[in-house]
Length: 136
Image 1 (cartoon, rainbow, N blue to C red):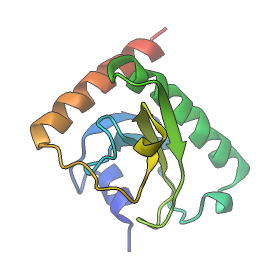
Image 2: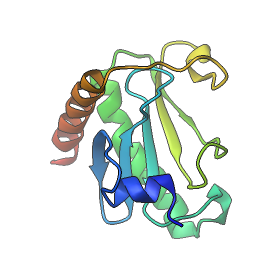
Image 3: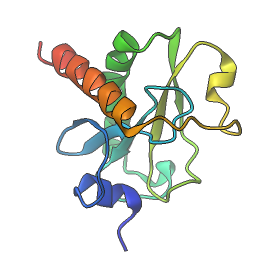
């Protein structure tokens, strides 16, 4: 059975899309720790990051490295934090989280519940910045 993220990638479940290439996909977390919290996933299904082949592993981080500056350019923050937790969905994913303090990366705290309109607007802004930064 396909994972939730595979179904999102295939367009079976809607998402607030940020970016993709032939191997990776990025979209907003719908219950973010902070606004602008993006998930970056490989299109290939794998449950555990260290089970990825070397090319997919390094490619995933390279793709995340392209997405992070787009987030940082439009979401006020000191840094973009990176986390791989891997317990929520059995599909490898990197969390890119705008942060101003260490507690912004606390997965035990209550998550935000933004409106679909707020998520759509945030995704559009990050996506436009991503396209601008990667066009050159």
